[in-house]
Image (cartoon, rainbow, N blue to C red; front, side):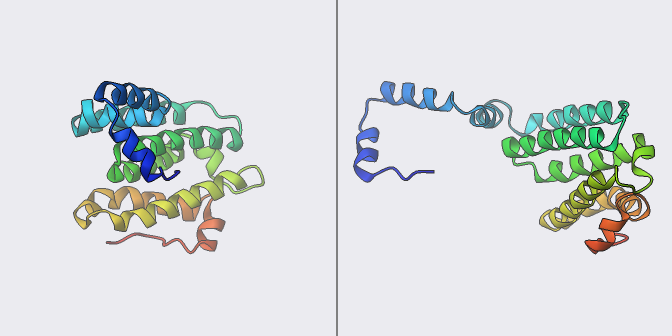
Length: 184
């Protein structure tokens, strides 16, 4: 972001309020992310947080149940859903939701696309690496939450770790030195 020169900053501050408001609204209108952040902060706030999470969970479940002909197509869908989670976090600053939704994403695809994730082969290599990296991401994010939340994630994290070590991502799980179970 560019630094505004002091004299320009003073000139902007001295503009009439009506003119500043028009400029501000025009600038805000150019950033979809800023619009969504302001929508959330000013009109929704935390009362809508669970609804936003549930919408993403519904999408994850729907897509994870779709027929995926190859691990590559499945990974494209996983990445798309992960970008929705990332966007959700940029808008809401929801650290808890980031972990919850990422765990839900990975476990849902294991639940519903097991045949594509069961064995490691050349076709599953990229998705196996992706899942291992996302698992590592979760394990790095967990300590940033208050430890009172750990009990809520323990079962799902350990379920994921067991799958990551037993199925297609196992090679990368060992290479990345992911733990076989998670205790807080």
